[in-house]
Image (cartoon, rainbow, N blue to C red; front, side, top):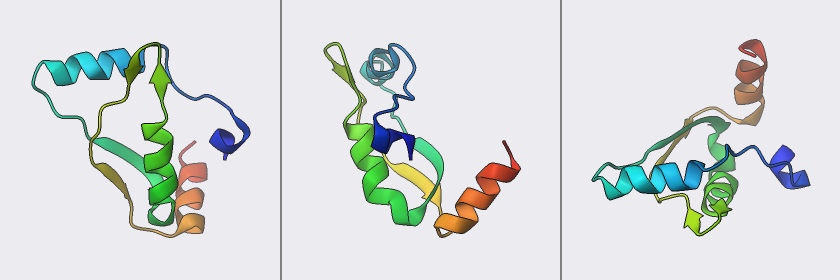
Length: 79
C-alpha cells in the first residue's frame, strides 16, 4: 500500500549491495509475505528500485500462496 503513495521502504544502498553480491556469482531470490494476487505489482516494485546507478538484480519472487486478506491477516498477527 505505501508504495502506491510513494513511501520508499528501501534500505540505503541495497541495490549496490545486491548487485555486488551477484557480481560475486551469487543469485538473488526475493521472499515476501505478499499475496499471490500481488505478484505483478511486487515484481514491478522490485524492478523499479533504482539507487544512484544501481538497480536491484533480477531474481525469482517467492510469495504467499494465500489470497490478499489471508496474507494481510497473517502479517498483522506477526507484527
